[in-house]
Every structure is written in structure tokens, then in C-alpha cells.
Amino acid sequence: MPWCPKCKNEYVEGIKVCADCGTELVDSLDITETEDIITDENLTDDEKAAIEEFLADENPEDAEVKKAVWSRAYQNSAQKAEDNKSSAYTLLFLGVIGLAVCILIFSDVIPVYQNSVTTKYLVCGVMSALFILFIVFGFVSMKSFKVLTLKAKSEDSLLKEITKWCEENLTIENIDAGLFDNEEIPEEQKYFARTDKMKKIIQDKFMNLEEAFLDNFIDDYYQNLF
Image (cartoon, helix red, strand yellow):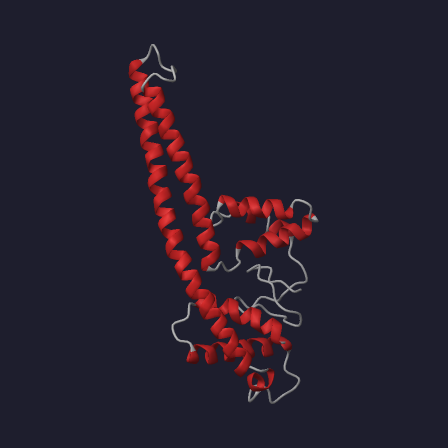
């Protein structure tokens, strides 16, 4: 599959130029261009761990390419909800356990600072504040998880509705109708013209769709259709 060496986006066979930057596509990405993908600050620790585990037994060149794709992949509400759920449980667990340990140390149940009262107050105070923040952030993540779960249900229902409508109305024939008078048009131009028309048709039917959601849907539907 062709790749854009600048944007690190993958395209379907036949596309020659990147739709975002206009750069000519290449057959594979240079490993040195993707070495820092796994350290991308936009990735969570869970995402980085999952990528490392998935790539553990892969060919190094293939691994670096996959990193470029994974770091830029569209993430739906269900995936975001699971990330927030995992973060919430982790933060709440660490916060409660840490706070309990601080209380035990402060109460001399765990005799760590028997001869240093000042140090005990200072350390327990600072650490307790830190673990309380963990608990607060855990509740915030849990709240986000619940909101995203509801959004994911709505998103899934919308996706099914759009897919059903497209299966009934978006065929190869009516997408290509009026687009190509010249059969010698390069494949990448056909791709851009088709996806642009599909996007406009869907937006006319389903208003106020998120850009990333719609782009991801069109890309998947295009590859299944063509």
C-alpha cells in the first residue's frame, strides 16, 4: 500500500499523491522518519503499551510503519470510554491505597518516622495531597467514561443508520455519475472526486456530523465499495 512520507497516511492502491499535502506517495516509509512515533505525547501509556506488545514479534520495518498509522488512527467514543474507564480505576486504586498508607504511617501503625515527627508530618501531608488528587482525577475520568459510553451508544446507532442508508443509496454507479467524462483520469483523482462527492451527499442527508467521524466512515466504506 502507498504511503505519504510527510503525513504518514496510508492510501489505497492506485493513489499517487497525498490528499493533505500534495506530496508524491512512496511504497514504504523510511524507518528513521517514524522512530519517535511511540513517544508521541498524544498517546496514553495504555496505547503505547498496546503498540509495543502488538509490535513485539513484528519485522522492524513493518513495526515502524504500524506505529505511524496507530498514532494517527481515528478513535471512536467507545475506545475513548474504555481508556477513561481504565484510567479511572487505576487512579482511584492508587489514590485509595496511597492515602490509606499515609494514614497508617501518620498513626505510627507503620513505624517509618519514629524519631522524626516533623518529617512525618511533612511527608504524609505532601503524599496525602498527591493521592487525593489521584482520587479526584479518578472520579473525573469515571465521569468522562459515563458520558462517552452514552455518546458511544448514540454513535453506534448513527453509524448503523448511515451504513444502511449508504448501502441503499450510494452505489458505484450513482457515485461515478457525472464525475468522469475521461476514462484516462488517474486513479488518485478518481479517489478524491468520489470521496468528496460521497462526503457532500452524506452531509446533505445527515447534518452536523463530526469531521473525523465522517472521514473515517467514508474511507472504510470506500474501500469496501471499490
